Length: 311
Length: 247
Image 1 (tube, rainbow over the protein chains, first blue to last red):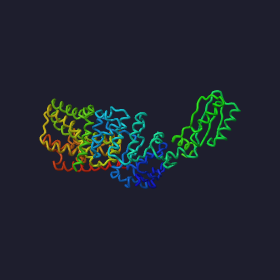
Image 2 (image 1 turned 135 degrees about the vertical axis):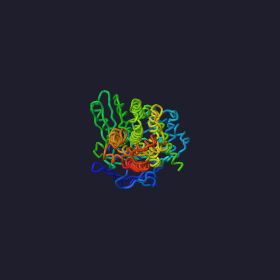
Image 3 (image 1 turned 60 degrees about the vertical axis):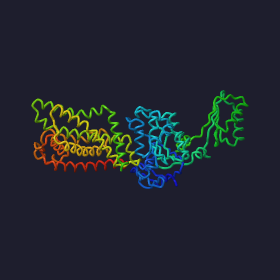
Image 4 (image 1 turned 120 degrees about the horizontal axis):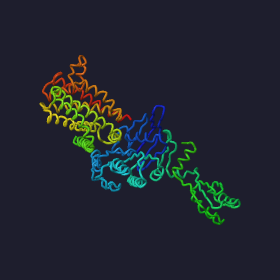
């Protein structure tokens, strides 16, 4: 059974904005939602959570219509970008209350508290905690009933990199345990690291979607290798380099020279050309100042989508 | 059912713990009714005894009205602003248990200011409670009315708009509802004012404190109050649920 099935979903806000989407989420799969502000990501997440009704279409969470929010509430955990915690309660008081609300035994949280590093703060008031720790509490509160699906809307926004890594490390453990997730974040690196699949939303529509690996290694995409040398490249050396890299190396697509170096383009991983380039320059006594590979990343995929005006 | 009330109690307890940790808010909530009681009480020591005796039930009625309305309203706004309502929607907790917890919380939070004003009246200015049961019952029914009103307005406004909106109802009620002078002095308009929620509330407090009723009977005042309480409670729940689910 699919964890989530979004069928012909439409949500209209007059003539201003219409969300129109179809997709499925499998068990254990982490799906990233990417797009500009106002693309419809949060709207989609709120519909799947049951917090918002669609104009038409259907969203099923483990076979239950998400309109029936109380029915799906035991299966989903929602982590949103707002902390929204009762600041004056102590961490332990708050979590104990949340356990009562969810019919969960507080003692069963000891492992999660340790994993998230919250066990040290149990007797502190929530208002005295850092934003990172507050966010960890939100995460723990949202998953203490062991949901099968986690819906995350900007879960690490405004959080320092260390805490972000701790949070993602914890969410990776959840993934291994078979939990599914839909993640919306502007940190594309995080999506690249944790998600299996990504959907690019633009103005309420799916612009592009696919498995992360496939998108990054899309055969039509070109990667760069930029080389800067100390004393420039003479015309005879330029010819040599062209011959070696363009004619003999089929993976090299193009090369353009400038005063202080050259730029190679390839459809393969640009780092594969690295050794050849270094050898050519070394054998011609050319001193290298810098070599930079155009790293393949989701961010680059998105940037190219922007550039091509497709998004 | 046990589980239902356990959740109500847990939400109520959390709310009251938070409330008591903002000490300044507790002190300020006590201030208004206490100052009113002291001001009228002092006047009673210098020839204003009759006016004071007349005003005490009104002071109590107004204290309940303002305190419960603002408490329930601000709580509702705060719940919305910190997205606590999302958590309620997304959890197995029923709307009714959440509303009941918030209602009880508003009623309990206002015991202190009302009780403090009454205590000062009893200790320093010879105020007596003749019918304690009527006092408690009137307090509870009145509190339900104003909690419903607070939730209703709080469900659709922010802090600034809330104050303006509820004052539109509460300020006229305070001045026309028989707090400072008998409503008979309003002439024909008194027939309208009789049916303001504040009027039967003050009349029942008057009976509880002084043993007399000047408008209607005990029963008629209870009936009017109860009708208001039922309507206000239902509208409060409906407004809250509408505000939460139709976003």
